[in-house]
Length: 122
Image (cartoon, rainbow, N blue to C red):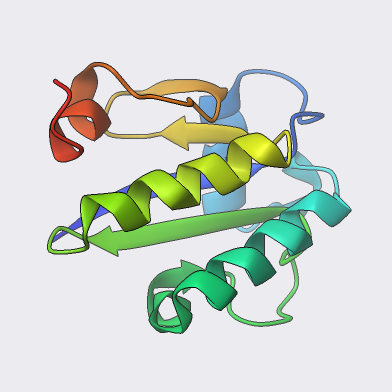
């Protein structure tokens, strides 16, 4: 079981849930390429290389510059999850939480919902 987080360019147009649905269906045109997505990907892998196993798309596959989907195991340390979200915020990226069907710029301090509970703030 995992906690899923989608990170993509803040320049993505339209309803983020629809954008994510399109990306899941393989429509890479749903999100624009953004060098910040690549920087985020690299920073996450520098922080925790093992997250490569739960990251989509893999490596330099098509779409790697458009989005990152992380399927974070529940036993991941909350501090790691928090740092991942901080990295997204620092890079000005959008974070989508499909469990809560919410999106926003990555929160500095999640307060409610599933992510807040995961981090002990809910």
